[in-house]
Image 1 (tube, helix red, strand yellow):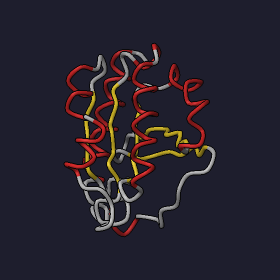
Image 2 (image 1 turned 90 degrees about the vertical axis):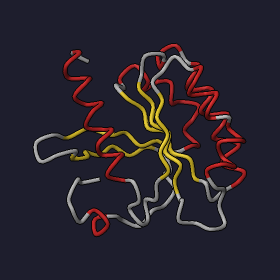
Image 3 (image 1 turned 30 degrees about the horizontal axis):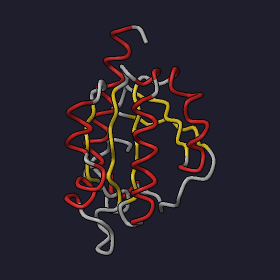
Length: 156
């Protein structure tokens, strides 16, 4: 997510997040965002970080069918938390490059994403991505940049 024209060259091997990772993401040459990455197993403590977040990216691994169902429960829990009611949410459907995984219509049907985005109090965007190939990562960077600018202008 460095924002360079050679974004695909910068993509590391992906592995599931265990615990938490804190990193800086450059959204432009002059702008950076601090990102706290938390694995799904950390779901029970996610709520401790909501108040410090100006935006949330929620990644779903579409290659693991059972994980998509678990992610649905975690997403609904997060969206219903009082501290996220005014927080912008980006749902990332990862591993679009995996032919054995679920496709967009299957995930949308299972998770009812059209209803979720329609009825949630939050501003919710959904993007299909591939961290492996770099597909749509430029759009993720753009979203992060926009959310950072909004947070700065509102004093968050």
